Length: 385
Image 1 (spheres, rainbow, N blue to C red):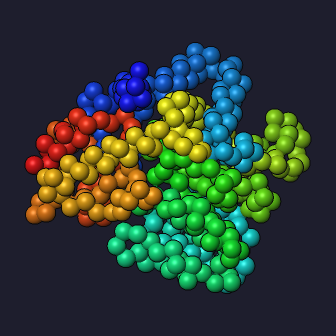
Image 2: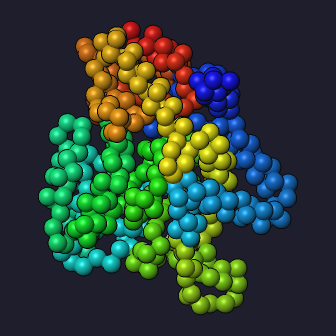
C-alpha cells in the first residue's frame, strides 16, 4: 500500500477515536482538546473501580501513573527521574519561579506577549527583589537578539513559550537554549502549545526546565500535566509544598525524616490527581502510537499539513492570515482576520453551526489537530462566508 494511503488510513483511524468529530469541526485544541475514546475509557474505568472497590486497586492505579511518567519521559527523551506529574503549567512554572535560589537584584527575561501563566509567577517575585524584564514583540516574531540584549550579568532565567498562544509562532528551542547557555542563563520552556504534536528532544536541546498541562494538544483531561527538571538542577530548586510523597520512604508514614527523593517527583507533594493522570497516560499512549517522538513526529507533520490547507482556503475567501508560516516557525495555531466583519459574532455563528474556534487578541484562531480533515476545513470556510 502506498505511503500516502497508509498515512490517510492512520489519520482516519485516529479520527474514529475522536467522537467529537461526529458533531463538530473542532479547531480549538489550543484552548482545550477533546478526549479520545481510550482516555474516556480510562477515566470511566477508574470511576467504576473506585465506586465498586474503593482503594483496593490503589496499587494498580499508582502503577498506571508511573507508566504515564515513563511515556511522558520517552516522548521528550528525558528520564523518568526528571519528570514530575503536576496539575497544570502554572504549577510547573511556579515551582521553578519560587524554588530558584534568587538573590536581590537578579532578573528574569520573558516576552511581553506571553500567556499570563508565564508572566505572573515571575512578576510575583518582585517582593523578593527580582526584576521581571518584558521584551516587546513587534508583529509576530520575537527577536532573539532583542531578548539577549535585555539580559545582563544578573539574568538567571529566560522563560519563553515554545509556541505563541495567540499567533502560533514556534521558536527554535535549540537556538534559544544555546544562546542563553553561552551567557550562563537557564531556560524555562512553556511547552503547552507544542508538546504532544511536535518533536522535542530535551537532551539535544539542553532544556533546563519545561512545563506543560496535558489538556490541549496532548488531548488529556484538565488538571494533569508534566514538569521536566534537568537532573543537574534537582538540587538547585528548593522543593515547595513538601509532603509524604516527596520523601524516599513515602509509604512509611510513621518515619519522620525529611529525606527527599532524588527525582523530580520530590516536587509532587501529596496525593495526585489519579484519574486525570491515568487519562493523560491513555492520551499519550495514543499519540505515541500515532507517531509522536522526541526526534520526529508524524502527528506534527499532519497538523502542519491540515493547518497549511486551512491557511490556503482562508486566503482564498479573503481572510488575512497573520503569523509566520515558514517551515521552521509555523505551528498548528492559525490566527486570522475577516475584514469588515464582527469577529465575535462570526465566532458565535460558527459555534451555532458546529464549528469550534477561538477569539484571541482581536483575531479568530483555529488550531486543528491531526484528527481534523479537509472536510472540517470546508465546513469552517462555509460558515465564515
